[in-house]
Image 1 (cartoon, rainbow, N blue to C red):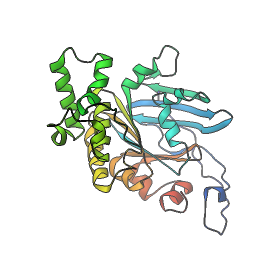
Image 2: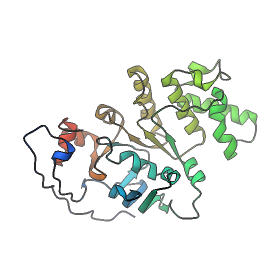
Image 3: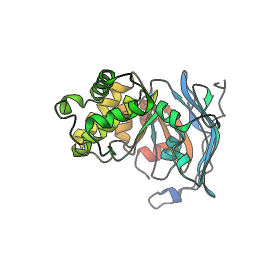
Image 4: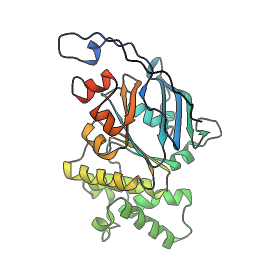
Amino acid sequence: MNEAVFNKLAEPTMKIKSTPETEDSLNIKYTATVGQPQCENAKFITRNVNVFYADNQAIHDVSLDIGAHEVIALIGPSGCGKSTYLRCLNRMNDTIDICKVEGQILLDNENIYTKKQDPVLLRARVGMVFQKPNPFPKSIYDNVAYGPRIHGLTKNKSELDDLVEESLIKAGLFQEVKDRLQAPGTGLSGGQQQRLCIARTIAIQPEVILMDEPASALDPIATAKIEELINELKENFTIVIVTHSMQQAARVSQRTAYFHMGRLIEVGDTDQIFTNPSHDLTEKYITGRFG
Protein backbone atom coordinates (compact mmCIF):
# COMPACT_ATOMS: atom_id res chain seq x y z
CA MET A 1 0.00 0.00 0.00
CA ASN A 2 2.98 2.38 0.40
CA GLU A 3 3.68 4.57 -2.65
CA ALA A 4 7.26 4.56 -3.95
CA VAL A 5 7.51 8.31 -3.87
CA PHE A 6 5.56 10.65 -1.63
CA ASN A 7 4.71 14.26 -2.61
CA LYS A 8 7.65 16.44 -3.56
CA LEU A 9 8.80 18.39 -0.52
CA ALA A 10 8.91 22.17 -0.44
CA GLU A 11 9.41 24.91 2.10
CA PRO A 12 6.55 27.31 2.94
CA THR A 13 6.53 30.98 2.18
CA MET A 14 5.86 33.04 5.29
CA LYS A 15 5.86 36.67 6.36
CA ILE A 16 6.93 37.30 9.95
CA LYS A 17 6.18 40.45 11.90
CA SER A 18 8.73 42.05 14.18
CA THR A 19 6.46 41.55 17.20
CA PRO A 20 6.54 38.22 19.10
CA GLU A 21 5.19 35.51 16.85
CA THR A 22 1.81 33.84 17.21
CA GLU A 23 0.08 31.49 14.81
CA ASP A 24 -1.95 34.41 13.47
CA SER A 25 1.22 36.41 12.76
CA LEU A 26 2.39 33.76 10.28
CA ASN A 27 1.04 34.14 6.76
CA ILE A 28 1.61 30.58 5.66
CA LYS A 29 1.45 28.98 2.23
CA TYR A 30 1.02 25.28 3.00
CA THR A 31 2.74 22.66 0.89
CA ALA A 32 3.32 18.92 1.11
CA THR A 33 4.24 17.27 4.38
CA VAL A 34 7.99 17.35 4.99
CA GLY A 35 9.94 14.31 6.13
CA GLN A 36 8.90 10.67 6.21
CA PRO A 37 5.12 10.30 6.60
CA GLN A 38 5.38 6.74 5.31
CA CYS A 39 7.08 3.84 7.05
CA GLU A 40 7.85 0.17 6.74
CA ASN A 41 5.50 -2.39 8.31
CA ALA A 42 2.65 0.08 8.71
CA LYS A 43 -0.15 -0.87 11.10
CA PHE A 44 -2.24 2.15 10.10
CA ILE A 45 -2.17 3.79 6.68
CA THR A 46 -4.08 7.07 6.44
CA ARG A 47 -4.38 8.98 3.18
CA ASN A 48 -5.89 12.38 2.39
CA VAL A 49 -7.83 12.55 5.66
CA ASN A 50 -10.11 15.56 6.04
CA VAL A 51 -12.31 16.16 9.07
CA PHE A 52 -15.17 18.65 9.29
CA TYR A 53 -17.24 19.84 12.25
CA ALA A 54 -20.27 21.13 10.37
CA ASP A 55 -18.77 23.78 8.03
CA ASN A 56 -15.48 24.09 9.91
CA GLN A 57 -12.58 22.00 8.62
CA ALA A 58 -10.38 20.72 11.45
CA ILE A 59 -8.05 18.38 9.50
CA HIS A 60 -6.69 19.14 6.02
CA ASP A 61 -5.51 16.35 3.72
CA VAL A 62 -3.41 14.41 6.24
CA SER A 63 -1.49 11.35 5.00
CA LEU A 64 0.49 9.39 7.58
CA ASP A 65 1.62 5.83 8.27
CA ILE A 66 1.84 4.44 11.80
CA GLY A 67 4.28 1.56 12.14
CA ALA A 68 3.58 -1.65 14.03
CA HIS A 69 5.12 -1.76 17.52
CA GLU A 70 6.29 1.82 17.43
CA VAL A 71 5.45 4.81 19.58
CA ILE A 72 4.59 7.83 17.47
CA ALA A 73 4.00 11.19 19.15
CA LEU A 74 1.60 13.77 17.70
CA ILE A 75 2.66 17.27 18.76
CA GLY A 76 1.58 20.82 17.98
CA PRO A 77 -0.17 23.89 19.43
CA SER A 78 -3.58 23.65 21.06
CA GLY A 79 -6.31 23.34 18.45
CA CYS A 80 -3.98 22.07 15.73
CA GLY A 81 -6.03 18.91 15.10
CA LYS A 82 -3.83 16.24 16.67
CA SER A 83 -6.55 14.92 19.00
CA THR A 84 -9.13 15.05 16.21
CA TYR A 85 -6.82 12.96 14.02
CA LEU A 86 -6.22 10.53 16.90
CA ARG A 87 -9.97 10.03 17.36
CA CYS A 88 -10.30 9.13 13.68
CA LEU A 89 -8.21 6.01 14.27
CA ASN A 90 -10.91 4.25 16.31
CA ARG A 91 -13.91 6.19 15.03
CA MET A 92 -14.50 8.07 18.28
CA ASN A 93 -15.53 11.01 16.09
CA ASP A 94 -18.60 8.95 15.16
CA THR A 95 -20.05 10.01 18.52
CA ILE A 96 -20.16 13.65 17.34
CA ASP A 97 -23.20 14.23 15.11
CA ILE A 98 -21.76 17.18 13.19
CA CYS A 99 -18.42 15.48 12.48
CA LYS A 100 -17.63 14.15 9.00
CA VAL A 101 -14.48 12.22 8.11
CA GLU A 102 -13.20 11.90 4.54
CA GLY A 103 -10.24 10.00 3.10
CA GLN A 104 -8.77 6.54 3.63
CA ILE A 105 -7.93 5.05 7.02
CA LEU A 106 -6.67 1.47 6.83
CA LEU A 107 -5.89 -0.87 9.72
CA ASP A 108 -3.90 -3.86 8.49
CA ASN A 109 -4.84 -2.75 4.96
CA GLU A 110 -8.59 -2.84 5.71
CA ASN A 111 -10.77 0.27 5.57
CA ILE A 112 -12.18 0.95 9.05
CA TYR A 113 -14.86 3.32 7.72
CA THR A 114 -16.89 0.78 5.76
CA LYS A 115 -20.49 0.15 6.79
CA LYS A 116 -19.67 -3.45 7.67
CA GLN A 117 -17.12 -2.34 10.28
CA ASP A 118 -18.61 -2.50 13.77
CA PRO A 119 -17.16 0.48 15.72
CA VAL A 120 -17.44 -1.45 19.01
CA LEU A 121 -15.30 -4.27 17.66
CA LEU A 122 -12.89 -1.74 16.15
CA ARG A 123 -12.44 -0.09 19.56
CA ALA A 124 -11.59 -3.48 21.02
CA ARG A 125 -8.69 -3.63 18.54
CA VAL A 126 -7.80 0.05 18.95
CA GLY A 127 -8.10 1.02 22.61
CA MET A 128 -7.97 4.55 23.99
CA VAL A 129 -6.67 6.21 27.14
CA PHE A 130 -8.01 9.71 27.74
CA GLN A 131 -6.48 12.84 29.20
CA LYS A 132 -8.39 12.64 32.47
CA PRO A 133 -8.49 9.27 34.27
CA ASN A 134 -12.01 7.87 34.02
CA PRO A 135 -12.30 4.67 36.08
CA PHE A 136 -15.75 3.13 36.28
CA PRO A 137 -17.58 3.41 39.64
CA LYS A 138 -16.69 -0.22 40.28
CA SER A 139 -14.00 -2.13 42.13
CA ILE A 140 -10.43 -2.20 40.83
CA TYR A 141 -11.01 -5.81 39.78
CA ASP A 142 -14.28 -5.07 37.96
CA ASN A 143 -12.77 -2.08 36.14
CA VAL A 144 -10.26 -4.40 34.48
CA ALA A 145 -12.64 -7.36 34.10
CA TYR A 146 -15.42 -5.33 32.46
CA GLY A 147 -14.08 -5.44 28.89
CA PRO A 148 -13.12 -9.13 28.86
CA ARG A 149 -16.59 -9.99 30.21
CA ILE A 150 -18.56 -8.12 27.55
CA HIS A 151 -16.30 -9.37 24.74
CA GLY A 152 -16.29 -12.96 26.01
CA LEU A 153 -12.50 -13.18 26.18
CA THR A 154 -12.36 -15.70 29.02
CA LYS A 155 -14.10 -19.02 29.63
CA ASN A 156 -14.25 -19.05 33.40
CA LYS A 157 -13.48 -17.15 36.60
CA SER A 158 -9.96 -18.55 36.84
CA GLU A 159 -9.06 -17.29 33.36
CA LEU A 160 -10.59 -13.91 34.16
CA ASP A 161 -8.61 -13.67 37.40
CA ASP A 162 -5.41 -14.40 35.47
CA LEU A 163 -6.21 -11.82 32.82
CA VAL A 164 -6.97 -9.13 35.41
CA GLU A 165 -3.71 -9.85 37.22
CA GLU A 166 -1.70 -9.91 33.99
CA SER A 167 -3.20 -6.60 32.86
CA LEU A 168 -2.48 -4.92 36.19
CA ILE A 169 1.09 -6.21 36.08
CA LYS A 170 1.60 -4.86 32.55
CA ALA A 171 0.20 -1.51 33.71
CA GLY A 172 2.66 -1.45 36.61
CA LEU A 173 -0.12 -1.35 39.19
CA PHE A 174 -0.54 -4.87 40.54
CA GLN A 175 1.93 -4.65 43.42
CA GLU A 176 0.21 -1.49 44.66
CA VAL A 177 -3.34 -2.89 44.63
CA LYS A 178 -3.05 -6.69 44.91
CA ASP A 179 -4.42 -6.71 48.46
CA ARG A 180 -7.40 -4.44 47.71
CA LEU A 181 -8.76 -5.52 44.34
CA GLN A 182 -12.33 -5.13 45.61
CA ALA A 183 -11.74 -1.51 46.67
CA PRO A 184 -13.29 1.22 44.48
CA GLY A 185 -11.16 2.23 41.51
CA THR A 186 -12.19 5.83 42.12
CA GLY A 187 -10.39 5.71 45.47
CA LEU A 188 -6.96 5.46 43.87
CA SER A 189 -4.63 8.41 43.35
CA GLY A 190 -4.71 10.20 39.99
CA GLY A 191 -1.65 8.39 38.67
CA GLN A 192 -2.94 5.03 39.86
CA GLN A 193 -6.32 5.72 38.27
CA GLN A 194 -4.64 6.42 34.93
CA ARG A 195 -2.66 3.17 35.15
CA LEU A 196 -5.92 1.40 36.04
CA CYS A 197 -7.43 2.82 32.85
CA ILE A 198 -4.40 1.56 30.92
CA ALA A 199 -4.87 -1.88 32.52
CA ARG A 200 -8.53 -1.76 31.52
CA THR A 201 -7.48 -1.00 27.94
CA ILE A 202 -4.83 -3.74 27.88
CA ALA A 203 -7.31 -6.31 29.24
CA ILE A 204 -9.31 -6.38 26.00
CA GLN A 205 -6.10 -7.33 24.18
CA PRO A 206 -5.99 -4.49 21.64
CA GLU A 207 -3.45 -4.21 18.85
CA VAL A 208 -3.16 -0.41 19.10
CA ILE A 209 -3.38 1.94 22.07
CA LEU A 210 -4.28 5.59 21.51
CA MET A 211 -3.27 7.99 24.29
CA ASP A 212 -4.65 11.52 24.38
CA GLU A 213 -2.34 13.47 26.72
CA PRO A 214 -2.36 10.65 29.28
CA ALA A 215 -0.08 12.38 31.78
CA SER A 216 -1.16 16.02 31.47
CA ALA A 217 -3.15 15.95 34.73
CA LEU A 218 -0.53 14.02 36.72
CA ASP A 219 2.35 15.00 38.98
CA PRO A 220 5.97 14.41 37.84
CA ILE A 221 6.35 11.11 39.70
CA ALA A 222 3.13 9.68 38.25
CA THR A 223 4.10 11.02 34.82
CA ALA A 224 7.45 9.23 34.98
CA LYS A 225 5.66 5.95 35.76
CA ILE A 226 3.33 6.40 32.77
CA GLU A 227 6.30 7.13 30.49
CA GLU A 228 8.17 4.07 31.76
CA LEU A 229 5.05 2.02 31.12
CA ILE A 230 4.77 3.32 27.53
CA ASN A 231 8.35 2.22 26.86
CA GLU A 232 7.50 -1.28 28.10
CA LEU A 233 4.17 -1.54 26.24
CA LYS A 234 5.64 -0.81 22.81
CA GLU A 235 7.00 -4.37 22.75
CA ASN A 236 3.44 -5.68 22.44
CA PHE A 237 1.39 -2.76 21.14
CA THR A 238 1.43 0.04 18.60
CA ILE A 239 1.07 3.30 20.52
CA VAL A 240 -0.04 6.72 19.25
CA ILE A 241 0.31 9.46 21.85
CA VAL A 242 -0.87 13.07 21.71
CA THR A 243 1.17 15.27 23.99
CA HIS A 244 1.77 18.97 24.64
CA SER A 245 5.08 18.08 26.29
CA MET A 246 7.92 18.02 23.79
CA GLN A 247 10.16 16.56 26.49
CA GLN A 248 7.72 13.69 26.90
CA ALA A 249 7.56 13.12 23.14
CA ALA A 250 11.37 13.00 23.04
CA ARG A 251 11.50 10.48 25.88
CA VAL A 252 8.88 7.97 24.77
CA SER A 253 8.53 8.05 20.96
CA GLN A 254 10.52 6.77 18.02
CA ARG A 255 8.74 8.97 15.46
CA THR A 256 7.13 12.38 15.84
CA ALA A 257 4.50 14.11 13.71
CA TYR A 258 4.06 17.89 13.98
CA PHE A 259 0.59 19.31 13.29
CA HIS A 260 -0.20 22.98 12.70
CA MET A 261 -3.68 24.42 12.17
CA GLY A 262 -5.11 21.12 10.98
CA ARG A 263 -2.23 20.22 8.67
CA LEU A 264 0.53 17.66 9.05
CA ILE A 265 3.68 19.75 8.64
CA GLU A 266 6.55 17.35 9.31
CA VAL A 267 7.14 13.72 10.26
CA GLY A 268 10.42 12.06 11.11
CA ASP A 269 12.54 10.21 13.62
CA THR A 270 12.08 11.87 16.99
CA ASP A 271 15.76 12.68 17.40
CA GLN A 272 15.81 14.41 14.03
CA ILE A 273 12.62 16.38 14.65
CA PHE A 274 13.97 17.82 17.90
CA THR A 275 17.58 18.39 16.84
CA ASN A 276 17.42 19.18 13.13
CA PRO A 277 13.85 19.88 11.93
CA SER A 278 13.42 20.44 8.21
CA HIS A 279 10.48 22.84 8.32
CA ASP A 280 10.47 26.40 9.63
CA LEU A 281 7.19 25.89 11.49
CA THR A 282 8.51 22.82 13.28
CA GLU A 283 11.61 24.66 14.38
CA LYS A 284 9.65 27.67 15.59
CA TYR A 285 7.33 25.44 17.63
CA ILE A 286 10.00 23.34 19.31
CA THR A 287 12.07 26.44 20.12
CA GLY A 288 9.06 28.14 21.74
CA ARG A 289 8.53 30.90 19.19
CA PHE A 290 4.81 30.06 19.30
CA GLY A 291 2.55 27.35 20.69
